[in-house]
Length: 57
Image (cartoon, rainbow, N blue to C red; front, side, top):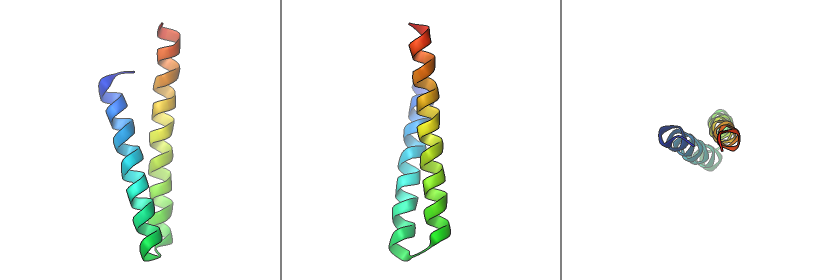
């Protein structure tokens, strides 16, 4: 996995998790949904890079 893509995936996952948790804490459904979406994008990016690594080796 490319170093920059790996770090981007982890940042998106962490940002999404934090946003989702904060949204739940304050009762903001929109923020919770945005956090969930950010986390899903990070997971998708990581899965894409894992697949690329699988075929690269």
